[in-house]
Length: 294
Image (cartoon, rainbow, N blue to C red; front, side, top):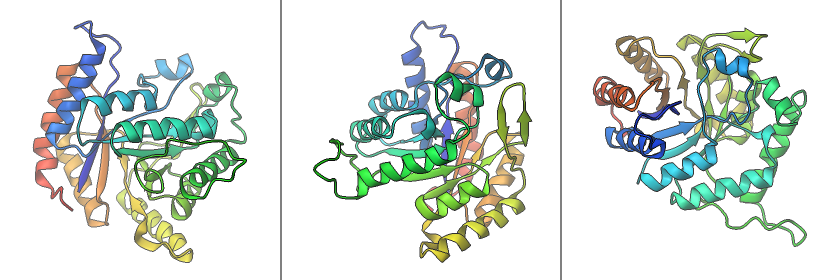
């Protein structure tokens, strides 16, 4: 079992050195045994969404490049990069940059996005975001895995990882599972409560039960089998809310028992000290009780 963690982007820095604060947290997570760290993708969310309790965020590609420079081995995950926000060639350049500067540690977690006001602020097409997602992903896969024609734009340098970085398709919808089965290296479902809040524009189907996830994994595998991919597809849940470490440990055990080998969590902390305390507790109570070599 491997474990990833999303660390907080602090609103204030008592030290006056926010870069040093973030570096301290990611190095601490790496030393504690976390396999990966992630950043979210919210370049222009609405004020209502933020004031509802949402987290601050760095630009994921710039932020993960910074993390690459202050760490040695921790994987660098976007969870999730919204493909509808950017031109695919800009995305390809950002990914190649992070992957090369990190010596091949980038993991590309992607989603369609859900915040309609954010799409509007970015002059992006919310209604057609699924089609945009599919087109952008196809372009990226083509850049990394297919010969380039003389008339194509130059897409150098390429990522260090052969055929591009691992692609984790995020989301709890059946469409996300279909995409993961056909094009992804893993499916990244999000354990969270069902939300449909018209005030914030946040829409996401919930996932709270391991039995439900098991049924969805069976569906994922069946789709993959139909296309000759089978168990090549990983299932790597992101657990957004932790209701105490003892109950969380039971959840991770249940996930392991249905074949999950990679779990990612979010560190909800207001200070560097709080984040480091969470990392210590998680390492002792969770990571230390599982075989991380699996």
